[in-house]
Image (cartoon, rainbow over all chains, first blue to last red; front, top):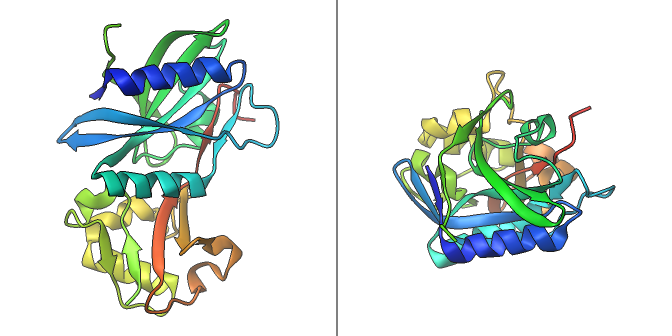
Length: 141
Length: 95
């Protein structure tokens, strides 16, 4: 189960809408207790895909390394990665799956015509062959 | 000794440690000793063929070992080894 606090959720939605029609990417920091994960901070990352960014994103590993260091400084965990799907549903695509990592939750935000529409969280397996939908609890407003 | 930083999601498999000092002359030796000390880490880093999983990148200090000597990259006493997954994706269908 993944719960996202209001402040990081506002940041994630704002990031996804500001990046439209391209895909955004960011890292979620928070706390893990057993199977329950709470996102307390969202860090915007740069999409470094060299081609079109309308339907692809790449996260620079050095940026993820820096985010992990930031989590260490704050006493938090890297909970997962978020990215947007402009004018698409929040599915976990074959591209998402083939470039995923099972250590993290992957939150996908659907942005339709520049506005946030809906979101899902996914848990890919170690062999990058399937991703299960994770219970996602968002702030009410 | 070189130090291996444990990514936050993997600390539960490494005695909740955020870093482990291991005696290894190369990256391959260091990771082998790390996963010998903490066997639960192995399946998260290596596939059934004993190779690092495709999404696992390893850095020595700020350098990706793919651009050094890979798992033969030499380590010194003050070196810091980081394990960082490669992450990408997007709404497009995989070719």
